[in-house]
Image 1 (cartoon, rainbow, N blue to C red):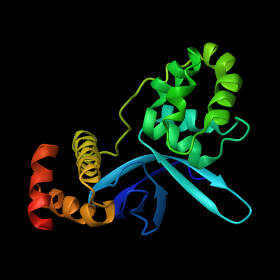
Image 2: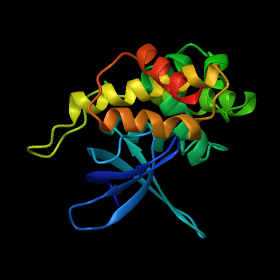
Image 3: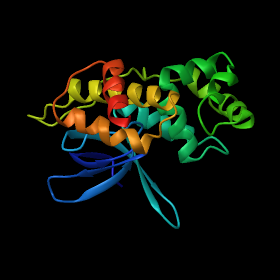
Image 4: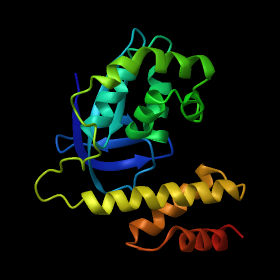
Amino acid sequence: MIGYISGTVVYSDSQKSIILTPQGVGYEVSTSTPMVPNRDVALYISHIIRETAQDLYGFESMDDKKFFEMLLDVNGIGPKSAFSLVTHLGVQQIISAITFDNTDLLKSAPGVGKKSAEQIVLSLKDKISKLEIGFSTREKPIKAGAKVSVENQHDAMLVKETLAACQGLGFKDQDVLPMIQKHLQNGLTVKPEDLVKMILKELR
């Protein structure tokens, strides 16, 4: 089973990234936000094996990976729904929603309906109350010499906010993402609103 991958991003879109390891193997991993090509990354991996396929889901912290796998134990919750919950809401919000029976918050994650939200609360409420680990958000460990922690977290947030703004303006991810990646590869450090303005100029 694959549990951890570190390497260089060679391709990324809004759903998957291909990470090339130093051994020359490229792994296709489901990721929550697009990553910038040619940047080093390190991800915890949940390796899902099915009869017809094998899928890798990437997480920046071990807590996220563990909670994702806990959600998979809930009847009716598959990998896509569990990944949607963890990446869109975050572990702390999910725990809060389960603790206070807030199914509306759980339903706000794409692909999670009313029955699924109710089943999550029913199945995990007792388990949540007995958790002995904090599920705190910690930075992912980085291999020695790799400059990725602060830089990549900033890039990920910048990409996510810029994509959201462009979606609100009616543009598709596949049209906008290459432009975002181009600016970031050039070493551009800007706020999301400034990057949106640059992209709009190119699209006009």
